[in-house]
Image (cartoon, rainbow, N blue to C red; front, side, top):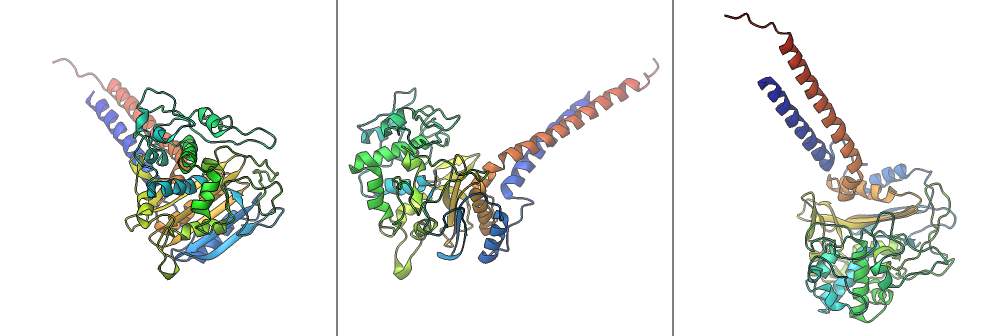
Length: 432
């Protein structure tokens, strides 16, 4: 019996050790090689272009930033030529810029990060819940810790389909992505676990309108986009047939539908790699001693946005409107945001405030390419696997956990069976 207990204990400990090893190896990038030698940005770009290959089925624009300067770029065109000024619909990357709009109102004293968000609303209110709605604050909405359980994800509205009002979308989004509940409500304890909520940013879109007294797109242009020189960027729908708008493509190369959105603050900024480069550069010291934020936000506000406000599995992953991708080795993080939407829009922007290095990738035609390339950049730049890469590898990690643990358990069971058989076959000592 003692042998069997020992085998059982050893099996459990071996399975636990295997699980720890697999998780640690995934988080630390064991076996993963950077695309190019560190500190060689042009070599990284060459490797990234090779990874894209010649068969990309859509449009793509990529810019590499080193020490706050553009050092290389790459474009893939289908149909109309794509360049640095071509507009892409950037899906959830929009949230990063929307967060800047929110923080301008905070900085001006018109919004309190920790006041109940309902206190700023007249056109729509959070529905009653089993939780304390007064604990839903702007800070928690920005960091996805407000307890909202909408699960949004917006699919958008096809041309010719009516677009919901902002209030109706908050009540229940008619364009909720598959699997999303779609109703913006408090379904968990505010201030508790991180739970990604597109609806939270739609609510912040309404807050900006209510507090500023202006339409969301107009306020964002006046307060954020124009002062930063993002003159091509807009939260408004470009005119039909606009020559500077990248066509949308599916993974098979077929031209895809251009969807329109009520939740523009969460999902539908139109911007270019040139404008997003200006946005990133504006968060670093500029020529002539220009301060980070360029007068739109203060350096202290930018630092607050980069401060950890949400964790997952014990790791800091979110600030106020920005994703914390990986420690940068200088006491901070590589930060930015990603966007992804059907049928095949994928966008990503990353930068390291300590070094002034960054990358912007906007594309249609592949569901994950931009995020993968940006994750490659983080690993090349910091030696760390970024948050989105870990999430994308979660399925593979679970398979390794299951296969390894299963093999260990089978081996333990086999050892137990053999031990029992040996005991059964051992001759019984004669009676004394």
